[in-house]
Image (cartoon, rainbow, N blue to C red; front, side, top):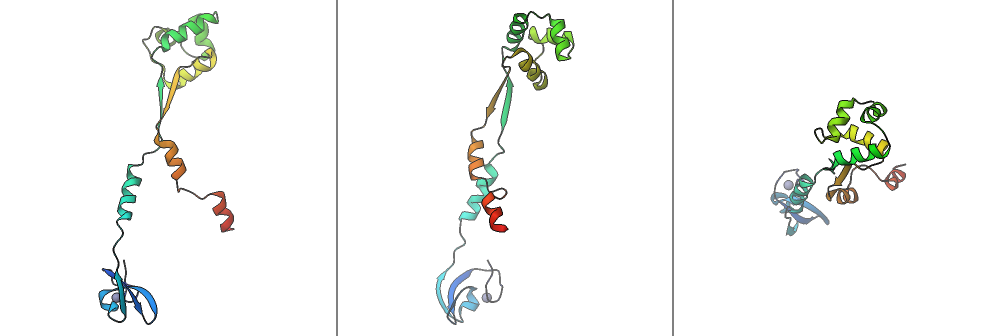
Amino acid sequence: MQCEMCGNETELFRAVIEGTELRVCKNCAGFGKVLQKIRVPAKEKKKKQEELSEEEPEVIQVIVPDYAKKVKQARESLGLKQEELAKKLNEKESIIHKVETGHYKPNLMLAQKLEHFLKIKLVEEYTAEKTEKKESTSSEGLTIGDLIKLK
Ligand SMILES: [Zn+2]
């Protein structure tokens, strides 16, 4: 903190000098009446630590463990061959075969294509609990109210 009289960066005191309350260094405080010593608030440091520990909201997408069975059953219920399904999805038949036998875990893109086409659920999303908290306490950006005030 800086002394409001001489600008020295040092321990400050709250003092009344010539009728005005100022935050001044020990030297300048001598010009007036010292009210109290100003303590550097410990809050600031704590706040920074909180911000650091706050992680980005994380959505974890996981392919369900029984994806092979689900794909196979859904395909068969549509009366499609692996080859036909592959064509519809613009994928290789061998990929579909591997997926259905559990030898190939589909990546998210393929899984989502399969989900849409077969109307099954292959991807499960887990959202870290912190997300909501972060959104509600976020100070990023301005609210609409702030924007109106600025105009
Ligand atoms: Zn000073």
